Amino acid sequence: ARGALIVPLEAEFQWSRAAIAGAVALGLLLFGLAAPFAGKLIDRFGPRIVATVSVALFALGTLLTLTVSSVLELVLYWGVVIGLGTGGTALVLGATIANRWFVSHRGLVTGVLSSAASAGQLVAVPLVVLLTVAYDWRTGVIVVAGFSFVLVPLVWLFLQDSPASVGLRGYGAETQTAAQAAAATASPVPMSRVVRHGDFWLLAGSFFVCGATSTGLIGTHLLPFAQDQGISSTAAAWAFGIMGAVNALGTMGSGWLCDRFDRRRLLFAYYTFRGLSLLARPWVSGPISLFLLAIIFGLEYIATVPPTATLVADVFGKQSVGQVFGWIFAAHQLGSAVVSSLAGVFYVWTGTYFESFVGAGLLAIVAGAFCLRLRVQTVSPVPVPA
Image (cartoon, rainbow, N blue to C red; front, side, top):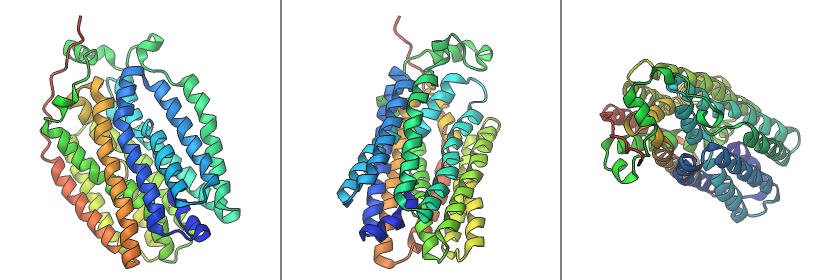
């Protein structure tokens, strides 16, 4: 919901949009850089403790936002504390849980868990904006921080590390072949082998563009862009929320599709569709066109996650998902950080988002072409020493 606070912070503190976007960009970058290390910790210690600590850091960083009085403090709270906190949650955590607990229907489950971020967006962004309009931006921050602190003990009490930790088997484990069962108990593939695999770089490169065009540009700048077009902050927030609701459906649908169709072709379709919708975005001129584009873009906002995460499991093995997808997600967040910051800088220079939307649209189309070059050659697992 940080994008909902850009204009209120501009108005109260007279900070430039580039400076505020820079704080968001650092948070997105550390979110990504923390992900592979969080993934490795999840692979080693389990999701429970990593998720609990991460949610606590996010709650703390959100609460500290209430005390902000300088850009440096904003960078510290949004960039460092929240950035590190979010690094241990979201997509890496969901991908790991899906591949640990499910042998069949992994794509659908990954889609459902990934859509949780959109469900949160559906609630958080309109809520923060409405509270800001009715009271002030601090009220919205208090509500988000309070809800986050409530989650900390709930995560610790109810999140389990694996089916084995509660005496169960993964859903669909009875259909596993001997080779699949052996791979499930193998050691993670070393990153020294992962980085020599061409599919790793194609997935990381396309996911860099995913981050640049989704959370980097749209997630950070959609609300300020809409307000610049004369659209009210409330209408813009509802458009953002609608995009989140549609994306929840789109991401779950993507998971269902990638259990049935070639994931490379799905990724090609998603990125191409995204590119075309971004190329149309500069011509938004009113609430109706904004809502229409929110629906179109929302269909594939995070739809790339299920095919990307399940391809990682197919190529590098389930035991390597936390670490390998963590590094691929780091590329996603690097793209988010770069474009979040650059779009703010270009806005200061030109007073418009035109160049940012057109450039992002072209990048998305190129990323789609990358995905067609994936070979999906499985890396042999490393047996656990006897």
